[in-house]
Each structure stands twice: as C-alpha cells, then as structure tokens.
Length: 192
Image (cartoon, rainbow, N blue to C red; front, side):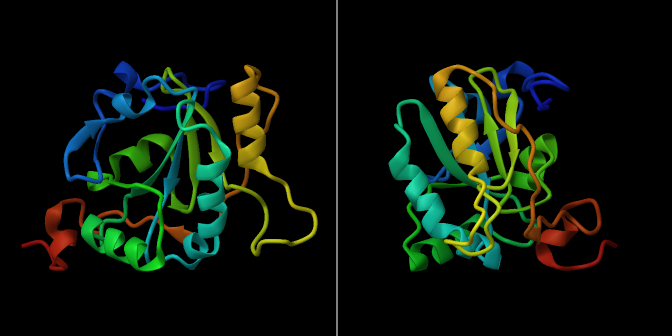
C-alpha cells in the first residue's frame, strides 16, 4: 500500500500489485514506472477539469525542467466516467505532451489518496509517497505569493534531503468512482 513516507511506508511489492495502462495500451506495473528514477511524479488528469487545463503550461514546463533520467512525470486518468481514449483525444487537441496512463477502476488514485484532479503525488524509488498536493498555490499563473510546492519537493529529493512540505492543499475536480460499486457505472446503467 502507498503511504506518506513518514506515516505508512512504501508501495507493497514496489508496485507490482497495481497496474496502469501505458500510452500504447499495454498494462504496466507501477513498480516499473518508479524503477531507476529518483522521483516519479503522478499528475492525476482529466480532460474535463478546468484546473487541469489551467495547469497545463506549468506541467509542460516541469517536463523541461527536470532530467528525465531522474524524474519521470506521467498523467494518470482515474475517473470512472472518462475513458483513456477520450482523455488522450482531449490531450492531443490541446497539445499536451505529458504521457497519459489509465488507472483501471481508480485503484492507484485510491491507494495514494488522490481525490481530485490535478492532484500531484511523488513516489520515490521504493514506492513511498514523498509528496501529495498541488504543483503550487496559484489559481492563475503569475499571482503574487506563489509557493512552488512541487518544485521544492523535487529539488530536495534530487539533492538527497527531505526538507520540504510533504503534504499541501489540493483543489480541483473530484475523481469519480463507480456510483454502484461495480462495472455498471462504465455503461451508465443502474445495476439489475
């Protein structure tokens, strides 16, 4: 199970139990994503969330700012009512470069406590949640008093220390789960 590094430990089995669908449509264990990286940034993503859209340029800048050999950033689509294909279509229309991975049944979102988009979760090489929050405290880029929460966490992790806020506030659109507790939500019909 995931947990805050200071509270609950690391991902059980280094992520072998949780699987995402990669950009080619192939299942991949979360443990594969975190392997050989100092930090893996999971950005919970939705094509219908205005907060995700507002943060798009900041996410694109993140991809440029940190070395891919040490930091991997991926978008995670966890909404029950949003297909990965739909999310990728919206991302392509917007020119999003962040690779989007599907989170079947929202299991990863649930495991790391992500309840809204664009919540950011940073995992270390062991699968421990080192940061859980938002990229920064700005609703619109350029606002006064910016607190670059994610940058501080990544810079500290790359420098080998943990002097950063591990948890910050989150805002945004709720990640939807199945309304009926089973597959019925996916086809928008009530259970029998």
